[in-house]
Image (tube, rainbow, N blue to C red; front, side, top):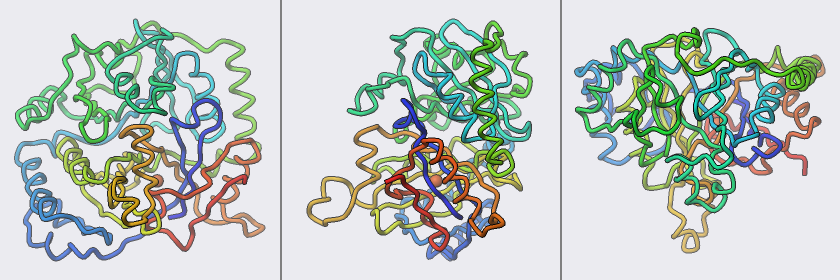
Length: 408
Ligand SMILES: [Fe+2]
């Protein structure tokens, strides 16, 4: 897997990041024999990979959670991710759309104005999840997501610019929520949700995770028919907005990125060192995903942990969920002399999504330059800054092809 992380340019750079990558490799896991003794069907089907050791608690409860999912009907109800929800600050939706037009295949499809937000439905291919951008109508909009961001020194600068969560399609959202509620998963009361998109009757939304600050959203509605969802009054982009977006789209096509950058491969969340296993197991309780495996990233003293949808043949149909955490917490950093980039991020920005990774066509250009390097170089030429350090998720399985890109 070749992976390069990029900071999106402009005012959103610190809040919503992009990454580019291609393909994953398999490895044998030291926990493989242990897990094979367990009888969960999903664990018999998928061999766990990676070199990251997990605790006895994790090993004991992973198969129990899969068994409960299977027995309670969760596995049968939930299909996978059909929507991904991101909120931006008031007045910054056009900037973010321009970033998406330059760096990704997502394009404006439908727009609605609710009582609290402008809702931008972005689409790449119908079989990929839609990307839903929410922009608060009020400059001083504040809800429970903003409240969490306001606790962290760098997140509070733009407390409404943050990832909200994925929308999972399920055969029956109410039944899904009923089952999960009986398993101590808590849901937000629509009457108390300020965000009009999230309180929509077509969605059922969990409480923010204690471990990730992400929400999980369930629907049995068709996100490819957004007019049927009652998201608000339809709106179209202004002529000036369309002109600006078309100019960016021209650049995207001029470089041939429309033929090289595909949909979303994975969504990477950073958590605290000692909450890594809780974050994974909690997520697995709430979805139909399985634990693919985990890798140590020695030089950043962290690990990356990957969960995937078992029912798809192509990752982009329901992107992988990745959790990254330091191996040791920040407070022993000066004792061990180990780096702490992942936990530094969490302390500055809070537990949250760190980047959205897009797949790049494998292979190379006629001049021998790898496609992923070509894409990154073109984006750098358009003033997209990339992280100076490779920190985290993508490095674990791909070191031979890893490329670090930076302007400096
Ligand atoms: Fe990644």
